[in-house]
Image (cartoon, rainbow, N blue to C red):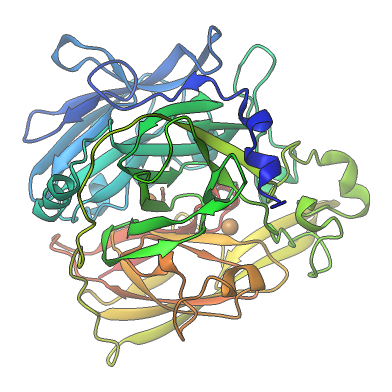
Length: 526
Ligand code: C2O
Ligand code: CU
Ligand code: CU
């Protein structure tokens, strides 16, 4: 019997009965087209909203009353080349911002901590949409409160569309919210009354905070009824810390059903790639096709996270955790009592979404190939910069202090740690030490391509598709790349932007507790 059987058999999936919340024409996640100078108003505020069915609880929401219709966390849709205008109204009791994750925008509208919006204030974010089609997202990025505000609810999707994207959707007969389904994966610690609890202890505040309730589009234990046709799932890992090892399995025999990866953070790949599994770390997106043409009506499948070694070695010996895949960076000695590991361990296996094949549908479309063009970048003149990722453990006023570092440095608000020549091309080698955790490294303002992956742990090396050690998810445009302990991942970035003057961006780990701990540097493109 396959080990997958235990996570996706009918018993485990029996409780997956809540209809998946979908973007559509009303309510939460309504799709709103944004175009032009007239701002879409997004109000960040506290509001009662259901996560567990029948239990409305106060959480943080993005609220908009566009066109007389109230929407929470709208899915914003924009055309490439159009002007995007949104206004943030801060009705929280603290600073917040709107950051457009993955978009190539100027510093002043990037929504980083450089431009906080105080309680009661407003800010307009207006920019030309320079990105190609892809699934991007928006979330707050205020200093010291990003992790908590995201965890407490502030996040939404932004879909950029261009001709290539529309052609693909026409070719495959896909409709956003119906057969082209965005999936936002998050894990949450919930109290008995359904309240979201963000209360990291001193260890989790540095190592990361995970919850035991997996939500898909804010739906716990979701189910979706599907037909015998092709589906597209555009998946965002919107969790603070948890990485997923995604696969689709058949409930009947636990066998992995291959899916086709067609895109990454920054849009479509050149060619579809068939994969059995993929890692998706916080901040990353994957564009997947699932072919159910040969499925039997009555069959059940599940999107799952397979078991893996989370490699949370920061606190320990540097070797694999003693508890195998159950280990979540067990701290030694005195710190032990303060640390509450998640009841759903990092790297544990669990079902994410139940898929019930409920009807037959004739479907004769084929996946086009090539999907897109991806010009390789000129590496010859590129400056190579090594950015070591490490953890410093020391004592501070009699207490143990832990600091994540990029190139030996932590965030300093008045210092631009990295200065890049405008229009230059650089290769950044993220070199993660062995005694570490995986770090999904994210850059604002620019997309990049992955050149190579070296020193990969076996569970990653097993997924390599080329001599450079790259996995399927390394083959497209990225803005967030997962760097495992002991790995060096080289990416190439062209620092060209059309904005007047020098621009400051952020490079940081997208495990939001690491970012909050200071694992972030300013990048000045001058
Ligand atoms: Cu999605 Cu600087 O972050
Ligand atoms: Cu970002
Ligand atoms: Cu990190």
